[in-house]
Amino acid sequence: TSIYKLKQPNMKNLVLFGPPGAGKGTQAEVLKEKYNLVHISTGDVFRYNIKNATDLGSLAKSYIDKGQLVPDTVTIDMLSAEVEKNPNANGFIFDGFPRTEAQADALATLLASKNTEVAAMVALEVDDEVLVQRLLERGKTSGRPDDADETVIRNRIKVYYAETAILKGYYEKQNKYHGVDGVGSVAEITARLSAVIDTL
Ligand code: B4P
Image (cartoon, rainbow, N blue to C red; front, side, top):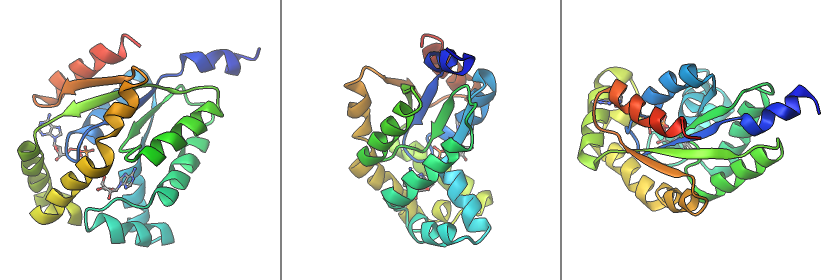
């Protein structure tokens, strides 16, 4: 009967979904402020570890630079640690996680242990050629090796269809999937996402 327990059912945990370059990171920055959520980007945590030359960083780099997914066990442990760092969160916005069915199962188990769950997957739908153009454009200034090379970018999109896209069905079965058009201005897309989130 503590306030903490009463708060749990209202937690809004969102999975922000979409192919590489769909704008997940861009929208997460806006939504975390608007809804007072803790933002966890697995890509950002990997890049932080690469920059600081940790063991996790050197392992992750060997996959990321080729446009491959980092192994599930490593990614799940890292995500769990990030969640544990925020025991008083009002809710989380997961950006770039889950990317495989094993990760989705692990997330469900982790949140269930905290008496909460994923409220919704909100997905940004963007055509492949638009994704390639956005990432090549970012690659001119981001310094990200995975954005610099069109072959690597196309491999990331291929991996998305092979391993990640099935998560649409995973959350549809739970009536939690909500797709929005991811093409337009950043503000227009925030409005489309907010229209979904406000119904939760
Ligand atoms: P991420 O860091 O998750 O990166 P992303 O898919 O490239 O980007 P995102 O969709 O966030 O796009 P953004 O807003 O930046 O992953 C990088 C790598 O890390 C993966 O390939 C993988 O190797 C590894 N990894 C991460 N999570 C993992 C996991 N769970 N399991 C295993 N491996 C994992 O936008 C892209 C560009 O578009 C930007 O330049 C932006 O300015 C532009 N843009 C955004 N919105 C726009 C709009 N409305 N109009 C025009 N341009 C827009």
